Image 1 (cartoon, helix red, strand yellow):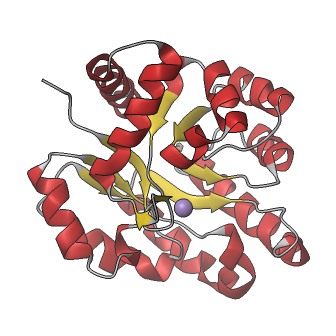
Image 2 (cartoon, protein in one colour; image 1 turned 60 degrees about the vertical axis):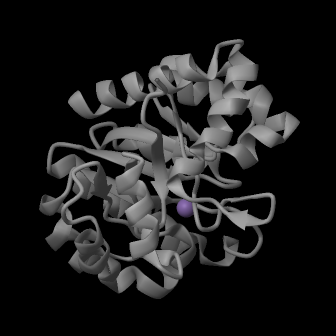
Length: 246
Ligand code: MN
């Protein structure tokens, strides 16, 4: 039997009908880390997970919203004791968001410092065009918790540094479809690789991915790792369990 799927980065609150997605998640016993993009979204998104112990909600402030929502850091601090999981957080160095770099770094550093103060959190981190700067920030706040780099797209040397810094990685089918992405994933320690969809942003064949669709990533990992899909699914679930037990 195939082990239940793990979706370590999904925006449940941003689907047109989150309840429908959650019904399917419940039926298929998928483990989901439901990430948020603003502290304001926390309560509503956390309420969606009520009654499903496999769905955990992360408190986030997305780097692409840092300049508009930095005033929500007060709320972030207030809510932080309610959860073990933080994200989506991080930095985005792409041209569209670089103008707000100063706000992004302030928000990210504030979040990491707050996490360190409360004894660390499990962090799901965006690092588009900013892998070095994300790793620098994590190095400065090494007590912030366990970083999971989601959809990592840095260079090979940035990846080596992330591995040395004990980062985890969540990878999806879009990343595994590209040659670059596959080469990166092949260099990651298998025991620190988890699956994700980044749904509804993450898509496959033009359709928004849902948590159970991490099976596409599992298929691709089975080719990359020369393992059966059942073995990949078991391996991912075991890593996930190890992470949350630590
Ligand atoms: Mn995301």
